[in-house]
Length: 266
Image 1 (cartoon, rainbow, N blue to C red):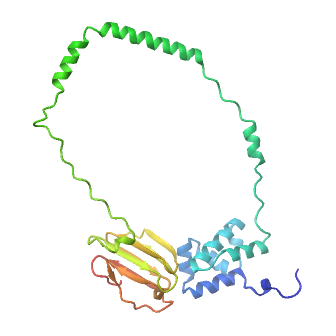
Image 2 (image 1 turned 90 degrees about the vertical axis):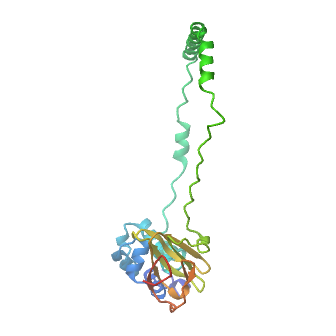
Image 3 (image 1 turned 180 degrees about the vertical axis):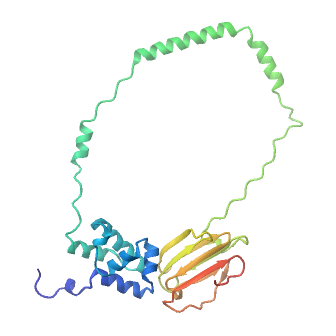
């Protein structure tokens, strides 16, 4: 037990730090659960410093790390605080047993040279016999093949094949040439960081995580792209090659859907 005040005495608990960061990012418990794949009761337990529902220290560290990244804070100080409060990390497994296994490994079996020599002799005898019995028929067969296999160069032409059109790949250049048969959405974090989630028309997750300031992401789908923006005011939005006018306040959570053609918020 330490006596006196120290920087560690003034720091908030792990759960309190995670809760404050979530509120500052404008995210709900349900949104954190969706982005981290951690069940809602465990998210509530983490904010209350109850790590017994995580299933052990390894899972607790993993949940803390995913929670911190989802709300936009550095997870390492929280992991160090958890280790200080719960006895530190487990000792690494010694490597001595691995070397013992290498030392007692059995030697490889030697090849059977006698069997190989017998097989080679049989192959040579068979080849000589085949050559003696089939030597008389060789000229006739050769002539027949030469006559029937000569192609007519004046009439036969190889069929022309049209190369397949390459399938467009989502990238930063997709906005410059947005295809009309798809919906193309580009997100740029020009004014700050924001947690974002993007899904295609089938509900398949395209991206779920934190977009830092200066970073950008581009998504494409043949019908629709659904978005959730944790801080819509920090995002600059381009849809199908056209910039969407900025109408989001800082810290505002937005759920949007875009389809082909002119951009229109769902």
